[in-house]
Image (cartoon, rainbow, N blue to C red; front, side, top):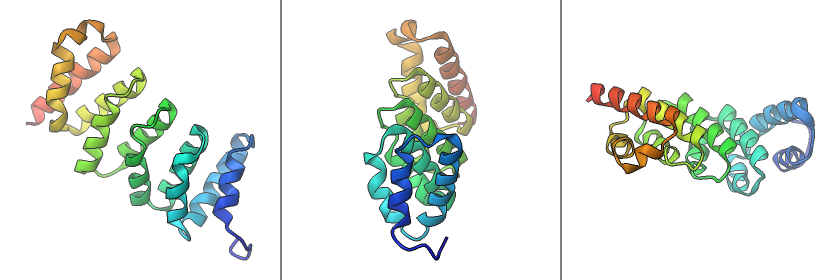
Length: 168
């Protein structure tokens, strides 16, 4: 692969935007991860302008090539409008070593407009016992909005509150 000339990343990312099937996506993602080490700034500059499915694949590739670069890219995408992108961000945050940046990114995801993203983020906040999330979760759980919360989300918030409180 190293003998092939040209900007590999540009062409590989362009390929992702085509309908190449799951197998093609896996191969392209692995190749992007391989070549990302040569030019990591290219992907950071391009990732935000891609369609959601391509963002997920490029984000995973960046994370495979360099977990700290993947975490940086993931935290920059917390408030992306697509819930599948947010779930990919969440999966990278779950794999990351805890830091304040991870905790704050999870707090952002907990306010997503999509229920499944909120629930998954709240569950992770409880798992890592993120104390900065406690007041916001308590407000959501005990305020007027509690009546409007879907039952799975209310349970996730209550469980997270108990875990966070126990860790204080």
